[in-house]
Picture 1 (cartoon, rainbow, N blue to C red):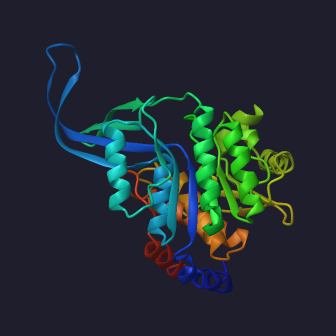
Picture 2 (cartoon, rainbow, N blue to C red):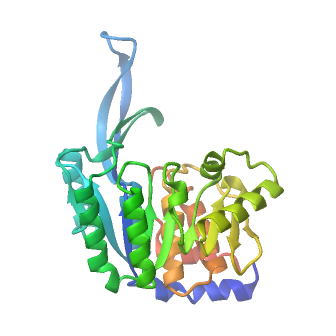
Picture 3 (tube, one colour):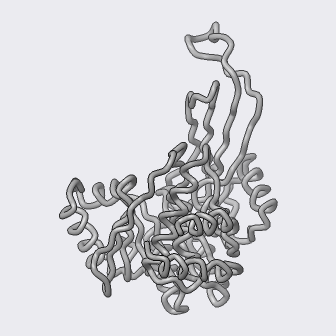
Length: 330
């Protein structure tokens, strides 16, 4: 990238502060049980983990909210937690991070979505998922939509963060986008398979390669495939921009007013890709709120995603680390 382009990115730094972004989607808790294996169980041929520590972190849409705060923005998560221990832990994490929790609806009919990883001797032994994928009922849909509408006048953007855990129903998706468009909010979408084509009229639709392959029932293997998939998404969803993430191949960017552009991934020591997608959508959205154009926002998002991949576990991007990385590009 040119020095002029990099300078334009650095000027965005102070504009990140205080942007207000709602995150509507599937809130999750990530748990880690870390210990050692010293024996095999006499009950079955499995290792016995002697747990030394437990770690609890934001997951799913909650991790997106945490990334927003780490970038200097104000996050307003809207979703569900259960009336259970995991819900209480997630709620306490939200409070500790000074994130607004008024949009976290307690639903006693379903568990808090939780992913528990058991790690011994630096090896991931097993992951235990506790969740419900049942769609939320009409009453809960109305609560989510009403709360978002109440907030909308004070927001800069909304992120729709879908993990197919039942919060983002067709009704919720349509109503949130309709309200956001009326209020001229930036609308960014991180989709999953189930409602992939429901997210019409967004500012940026950000699928990854596999999600796009699954949605269209195709294989994306060549440059031509990438162009055809991105162009088709742009037309079908009537999005202003499509940001197709390609893993090690970087990002392909499509827009109504621009030709396809590519942003390569920089070579990094990748330790863990967990949570990188959350970081990308968060950084992209805050950058757009700060006045970045789509290419600037995509570059920053790509860079942020790469930085967090160097860390073990799910960690948020920090503003200073992001902009220090840009300075190193000179």
